[in-house]
Length: 178
Image 1 (cartoon, rainbow, N blue to C red):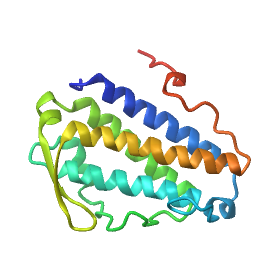
Image 2: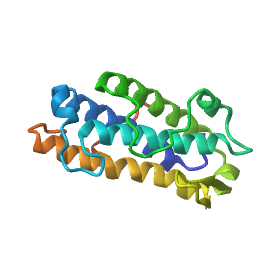
Image 3: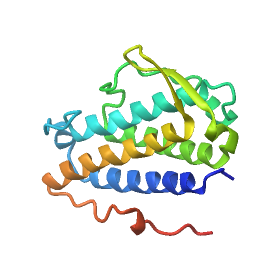
Image 4: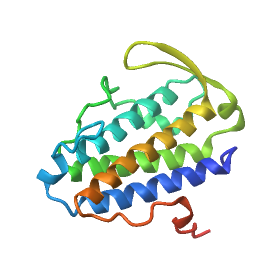
């Protein structure tokens, strides 16, 4: 079990909301998904790709740590994205498949993080080449906060396109079956 059950809750919320956003996005045509809507990453598909890219970057950084959980070894064959605006997935179905895979990995990973891993530091290099050292718990929290930030942008873009994602509050998430 994770040293911090709040991480398990955030990972579950992340997966739940991603499913809802992708379900809502699937009601639009491909042209509507790739239309430049003036968001940071242009389109709905661009913003959703950005989240997959950044989650991949962060998970690969965590996987490179000396005490990385073995569950992250599945990322060994995944290339490190080099830009935050990369579009590795040109269609929603292929992007959705990767998103679901990443969300399952994040659930597995957060479930086994130990107290010592959460209090450790992570040293990494940004996509611009700057070197940083941050505490792991802060960076994990950032991973979830970043998702929420850009999903909020996507829900706005979907709303502007006439698609209602519904309630996005954490408290609206169905309780675990446990």
